[in-house]
Image 1 (cartoon, one colour):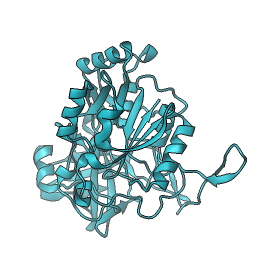
Image 2 (image 1 turned 135 degrees about the vertical axis):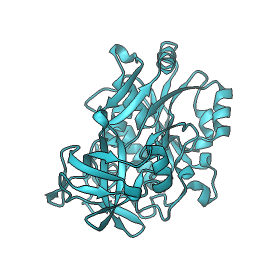
Image 3 (image 1 turned 120 degrees about the vertical axis):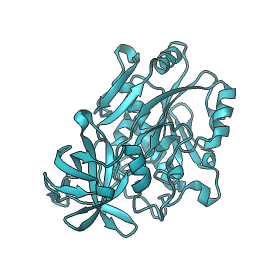
Image 4 (image 1 turned 60 degrees about the vertical axis):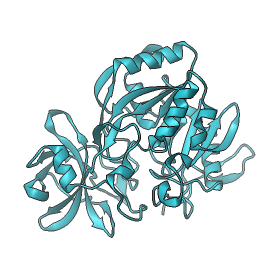
Length: 365
């Protein structure tokens, strides 16, 4: 466990940094809320408004928080069963397909089986051939990014790879793959547990989880309230909470109709609320002067940080992110450090749950 980072408040007193301190025991959601006796939209929602402070609600209260004319930007990407059983020279492994890349390449992550979950396989080399089910295979070509230091040594987590499968991707994954699962989730769940109500474009290695608490009933209530939805697609790559690298290169598409809705809402004085960090990444990728967005599609490697102003949104619905995760930089760019620290302190004190099956957070600018 990493040491607790400490900061000083205005009175000069030392305190633990709520964005860097290890998670308290019991803070990880180990199963979907439905298995905890809750509906999807009954998870908790912490609303952080610089004007109104912090408010504790349920996600199904969202129609009471939003206003007529507010716009929710929602990701329609559907989750793939992107974890494949694999072997390297007769050593068992698991291959996570993180996403397609240009020129027919893939970004992949090789992992060791570890109990019911997996751990990073950090000592693979270029040229490694990975055997997959039914005669499929992958060949590691080169690191996908500069490897970070881990415990004084470097290791390559994400690779550029060539992938050869005996049948089209979706059918192959349906027959052989499983949803990506990490050690904090206690057991395997069906793919349906990893889909959002908006999912209709298969392509994400991991669920765009900020939208998981939306139910069909809640969407209907929001529409009746006068809240508008603008769909886009961004296929999420792997997150792997063991590593805090920037997000991988990901494919996105913002259609012309949704770009017009975003620009119209802002011109009319209404709020644009991104559902998930994927929405922020997509909108900022296609943003021009003054935050005007344009239709676009392709691969984005944009990393939003506090050093780069966010120009396209007025709020963000997201989950609770690992200490020191790169997504926290984006959240700070949206809401500012003081609001973010106050939110995470309140979430820790209030025993909110982290990760894809956990509770939610609405940050307003």
